[in-house]
Length: 181
Image (cartoon, rainbow, N blue to C red; front, side, top):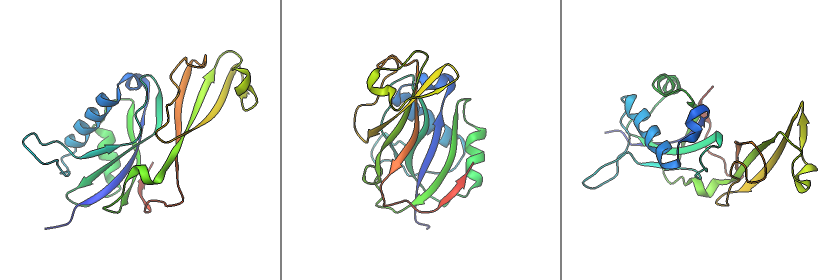
């Protein structure tokens, strides 16, 4: 019997799917993974579910270009798995890459925080203006948010759109990437 392999997946959620709550996103990803036919590790007990671990939850409405989740597979999976997942995923969700991680891997140990981009159609608040970049008629402000800190909600600073653009990892990196798009 082969040993389970643990993987860190990077995903994007955009379009209408940005309006899914964190719990709805978790269930959608679980359903998408089940559609692939690959067996994943299950929780114990009477009502078993796929054992998934997610990065920080986002407020509804934020585009996520750096979503993360960890799952263990009963068998090793290869780079072709990305195409399989994306072929059975709803429009607005895609796996960008994944890598194998050690069995004792904890996302909270290696994730320092996230970079957000807030888009403004009017001049941003004065304390953000110094770091703002104007592209045509849109102001873009990058903001670093440490892991497990509150994240900006749409409209909180007067912005009309917020994106989680990048996950920032500590020096301890995960294994080499298996697949990427």
